[in-house]
Length: 118
Image (cartoon, rainbow, N blue to C red; front, side, top):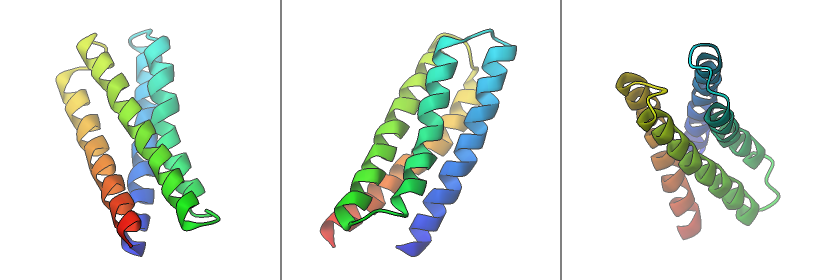
């Protein structure tokens, strides 16, 4: 389990850095101010909630923090889809970001399920 926690922390931080770069690109190149702010907020919140989970006061609190991170990841996927379908990001950008996000979502689901069973 410790390996997965370290992995999810690393993945979410790396993804947050990509989201920050995407946000800058959307502002500077596409002059897109609304959806860019939303994807920035939810995309960086994933890792923040995972970081917060390290200091959880109980197993239930730990699961709750990871569940919030999962909700933020789902919301981020929604914003990425809208940015793609509105042609603010191209296929390559969308595929790359959504592939990384799907790995994070899958890892979070696996950790949460394992914790609920154990």
